[in-house]
Length: 393
Image (cartoon, rainbow, N blue to C red):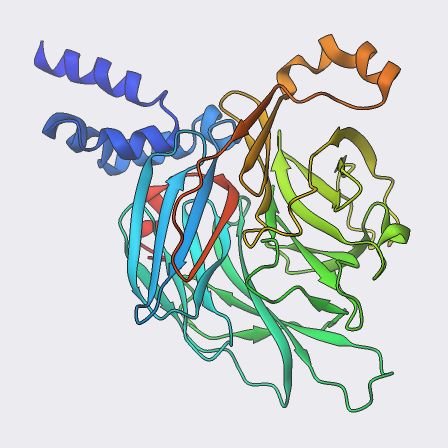
């Protein structure tokens, strides 16, 4: 009877979301034994509700830097605000550059420090070897991707070399490091890409959707995103696409652009600051034709109150999608906007009549005393997968 009861518990636990599986390990010894068993882990990560992405969550990563201390990074679940882990043993120049399934990629602002891959559940970190040096580094950034077809994790370095003459066309290198590879070395992709990736720690993070890594790029003499680089993680082929409303991005118009995943597709959030406009565009099914033009589809147009965002020292703007309840979320400073995407069919006629979608919730977030420096960013598509621990972590 005891074995039958254990098998019933196992079947119930298999239906849990990835984050709940990690938390339930602490309930009791029996559950811990079941959830850490290799056969259970293999079966769970291949379950339909895990593979389809319906169990994906968004992480809220708060980076705190005070006087005389290093980086104090707090990782929480964006939907429940429950803490996952705290990292305190890194230099203050580090920040979270990218999230990939159950891992976070930690890099430094100046590129002089070693890159880490961190498992927020266990707190373990893997050191990534230093990439090859280029002559004169103009800027560089890192991103992490995962290929469902090959089951491989890869770290990409996007680095630009400073041109001799300012009017020269700017090209950037793409270096690749495969985690768990026996060679343990970086490889430089033979094909360069145009322009440069956004590279400071205030830049929006890249998005990983169905084995494709999406990174915002900019022209060297512009201060807003210019194009979008798409990297196929499995083949490492990359293509460049135009962003929606590209003609509106000028020095005179301040715009913030973010990439994120919603319902398994890539969305672009474009916020024209000072104009109170927030657009959400969806990318059509991806093709590898390398065409610059994409027929983006405008899904939502919202009004946001951004009168005080220029004055605010916070200037926090982040979109994400909570797959648990279908909420499209957008943080603007100390205000959180929410829109229920599961009710789109009921609102279709109303949206066509007015042109604007209406928020379901507008929540004023509490203002806490801040240390010298604090930054909070959101990373979607988080999935706890202990199975991958042995190789990359």
